[in-house]
Amino acid sequence: MTVAEAIDPRLGIGGNNPPDLRERLAEDHAQLRHEIEKIASRANGAPKEVKSDDDLVAVGEIIKDARELTKRVDRARVAEKEPFLQGGRDVDAFFKVFIERLDNIAKKLGDRATVYQREKAAEARRKAEEEARKLAEEAERQRQIAEREAERNRPTASAKHEDKAEDLAERAAQAEAAAAAKAADLTRVRSDTGTVASARAEWKGEIVSMDAIDLNALRPYLKRDHVQMALNTFVRMGGRKLAGAKIFEDVKASFR
Image 1 (cartoon, rainbow, N blue to C red):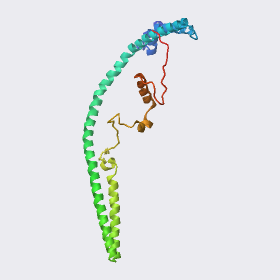
Image 2 (tube, one colour):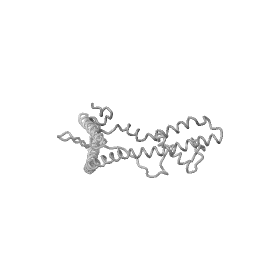
Image 3 (cartoon, rainbow, N blue to C red):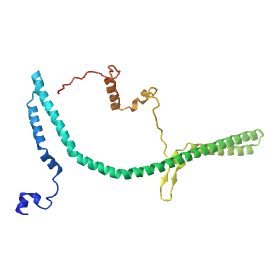
Image 4 (cartoon, one colour):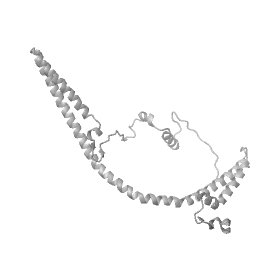
């Protein structure tokens, strides 16, 4: 290391590297830190309790100055952060084009597949229901034959038809179960490459009338924060009485 490098490290290897961000911020905004320390010192000397108008004014001036300095600090923060935010926006914008194109491709093809899968599931249910109906009808017909054979005192023939009826009834039950199967089971297909195509069904709710909807039924699922937001709006619009809520005038000191 040369003497010059010992005096100024920036003259040595790596000296062109930018300084650490925190170090640079601390150096560039040293004045802000100094002004904050001054306000903190004033705050330490402020009345511990406000017992007079003079105390109120003294505290108020510190609060006012602190808030003004807060605005300056925040403006500095925004200015320092903007290049990084812009860099992030540029990166997002670059890759967003790729992502949106791929999402669009997947969505369009997915919509086509959904139409087919819905039709496939509906057709599979229809066929299973039709098969179940026919099997049940035939099972009933075989039972009636078995009853007639029994009336004719032909137990062997009666038992034969009764066995057929039981077998048909079992197959009808299986067909009914198939008709009630999940959409995924009715539409699942696996390709030679391992891709599995199926359908997923889920129940959804959509509000059609705010006036008619039963809020009591939804009560267990309402978050407290959401109810509080509704209460705040109710009070802001002039509401002053509401069961289960405490509505009061909250007085706080204000300085300008």
